[in-house]
Amino acid sequence: MANLTYLHLGEQGTYMGAGFDYEYTFEDDKHMLSIRTDGVTEDDALVLETDEQFAQKLASVIENFRVSKWDGFSKSDSNVLDGDSFGFSARFDDKSSISAHGYMKYPSNYTEVKGALDALFLPLYESVRPNKRKVMTAYFEQVILKDTVRLENQEVHYPYIAKGGNMFSLGRCDCTGGAAWCPVYTDENQPEYMLVILLNEADEKWVLSCRVYRVTDDGEVHPWGEAEIDPAFFCSDKLYGHIFTRFSGDRLLLGVFTQKGFTAAGKDTKYYIDLYDIKDKLTPLANKMVQGPAYDKEYWTLDKLADFIETAQEYGFTQSLKYWEERPSDPVLASGLKDNTNHRFDFILSNNHNRDFYNTLINTPEGQPVGEYLVKGKLYFH
Image (cartoon, rainbow, N blue to C red; front, side):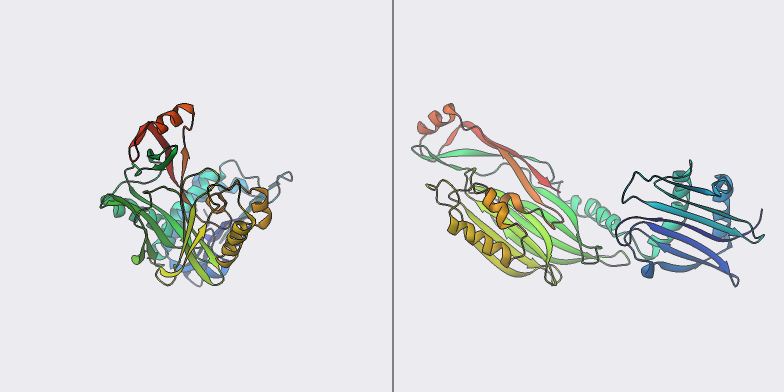
């Protein structure tokens, strides 16, 4: 069999830096590799020198999977818009070559060949540039979870507490607590930071805090900053919470939104927004409280709506005036933090306000739990 002098397998997608490129070249007695992974531009491809043994492994892939049968492959699926394409080429010292390409169409054993080349190229890439998502996952599972449990999808509930007459408040949330994590992306769309959400019990309260870790290019994890978001997050009628990251100007922000108060239409509530500068080690930037409609108001009044609009514009939220005008009874920020958001931590609740509940409430002494009635829900982090 002739000696391999060049090999390239690559895929291209629709967004900048999509796909990958694996390239091997033997020239001037040097075995050279260029490796580009998904999300990395061509200019940032990793270039390194390898050896004859690596070249032999590439040749074995071509031989064992009979890649020579790919030569001349050229197919496309014109029914798919914004799809992916691939290209393969190989050259040998006897002047023979293999060439194949396609758009949403692939040779029958393409997946097996790609997997074999992944197994050769990716370990070399990650030995120099570790996959930060994998580093974060391993750190969370091996370090953070040594001292706590996973927070995601836990069941929670609040008891109703009589306040006299037909009024009520909510008691202390019953949950397990724990930790959840997600990557935080830079403006280059790279996962450079890891955000860990912690919910811990302290002095009969649930304390919510955020830790940020920075992951270096060589795979080291360094504590970056910590902020205690709310010392009573799931206590005293707190019902909604959202944690998010987004860019505002040239700042990478960590934002926390909480609602205090309990009505489905957001009446008689207070909304709190806290912002931190992630790149500056969670330096506090802003704290804002917005008062929701009074309990005896049917919907959001124009002045309250204007207050929310002003707050949203000031802190980079992307909800539109049209959205708010169409949904005047919505506790706006509690359901609207979706645009340009990398992640959310929240919980969905259900209740049982029926005639039996109100009859029980009226007959319950002030300060006592209202029978077996609970507000139930689930914690989410996504």
